[in-house]
Length: 509
Ligand SMILES: *[C@@H]1O[C@H](CO)[C@@H](O)[C@H](O)[C@H]1NC(C)=O
Ligand SMILES: *[C@@H]1O[C@H](CO)[C@@H](O)[C@H](O)[C@H]1NC(C)=O
Ligand SMILES: *[C@@H]1O[C@H](CO)[C@@H](O)[C@H](O)[C@H]1NC(C)=O
Ligand SMILES: *[C@@H]1O[C@H](CO)[C@@H](O)[C@H](O)[C@H]1NC(C)=O
Ligand SMILES: *[C@@H]1O[C@H](CO)[C@@H](O)[C@H](O)[C@H]1NC(C)=O
Ligand SMILES: *[C@@H]1O[C@H](CO)[C@@H](O)[C@H](O)[C@H]1NC(C)=O
Image (cartoon, rainbow, N blue to C red; front, side, top):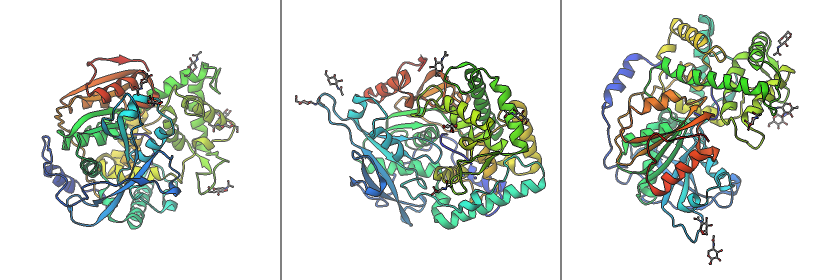
């Protein structure tokens, strides 16, 4: 998972309806033959300059590709996916291999934006850029692919994801339901088909239209979920597949909370230690663990002002729950300069400012479409049985508080399990174990202390992917490709040669 967080079926998901869905899926791999259905989509894609209002780097080309809203009704209503291409850079000594899709995760993150960053020089990798047309296909309901919309005034209602009594529980269910209904009204029937299986089918249709060459795919964070589901459906159509910062979809809800929240909690303790003594930390010399605890105690009594925010952009003050959720993404790039300093430096500054009465950097954003798409996709991909009644939710809160004292379960997983409670659309992509049997070797990349997609998920996926190699990066931070270190080099060599490294490789950057 990557960017932000925060919510969705005409009433609660009912257990019988999910049982029906589960039994409709075969339990072993289910490769799809004859996809896409004949004449359901165009047979080619035409690229042109991007529309000026996009402000895209000059090197990028843009295209649209019309697909069915519901792949089960391939001749029904269609809508346009939007995609960008960074053409393989001209080179005298490297020839082009093919197209390579990148997905940055989220869910809700924009592939088009990531490719734009690459076009602007974010990735120093000449041979790689000369070898591939890099394709950024925004998943359905995201960015250029019919961005989902909702009533943001409902989104902005301050309702706790940790209800303590029936009244708070009802408030949460009511908000989620009204928000989901507003999204359905503004977005239309696509909202019912934003799940990751549908997105994987879109990628397959685009791959075929691009010339039907085997796919090269780099899935980062939640993009690993997309890549894994693609590989489950289309195992024979892959040249190379990298899963960087691995999500496992099939675990129990409680285990999923623990994996992500514990990973975040652990990353935070590493940050505390660093921030107390590193010269670039605004909190150098302080007991940062104690400061965190004291700050949260204070903010739970009186929210801390966020003077740089205004009503349209972000919330005017910040409570303890919001600090716990909003601090997580600062751990993503532990040692890497994000352009403003490393994300650990930024977090130390954000917390320092909060102790001085300005929590703006930790305030919840109201203007981030990623957060809306996060809900649209997440609520179709993940169940929330353990949140359906107040007693089970309270038991889950007890687990979260006891096991992860600094974060109390705060995580994107917690957001989805509790913000999807009451969402008016049924889960479509019901979690289940995959059975991925590719001819090509899948390259999994995982850091030991990833604060979002924790190591237990990557280890879990070893059981679901037959032919794979796990590259371990020792260290903090979320995913590895963007760091530009040794892991990036290994990934690039795999993409270019098509040969996976030996299993058991461990790198430190
Ligand atoms: C390619 O070769 C030509 C002719 O030798 C040379 O002028 C040009 O600079 C080279 N381009 C690159 C990218 O190396
Ligand atoms: C092309 O060859 C030059 C000279 O040998 C080398 O410096 C450069 O890195 C090569 N470029 C690629 C894309 O392989
Ligand atoms: C919390 O509030 C107390 C009492 O006002 C204050 O002494 C303390 O410094 C505050 N803690 C932080 C981390 O701001
Ligand atoms: C509030 O945000 C809007 C939208 O970005 C901006 O136009 C306006 O100047 C901001 N107001 C203040 C007081 O910062
Ligand atoms: C301070 O942190 C930076 C960034 O993580 C790191 O490169 C540097 O080595 C650290 N300094 C010390 C003295 O540990
Ligand atoms: C903390 O406040 C200072 C001074 O206003 C500001 O320059 C800095 O950007 C703030 N830190 C963060 C992370 O926003």
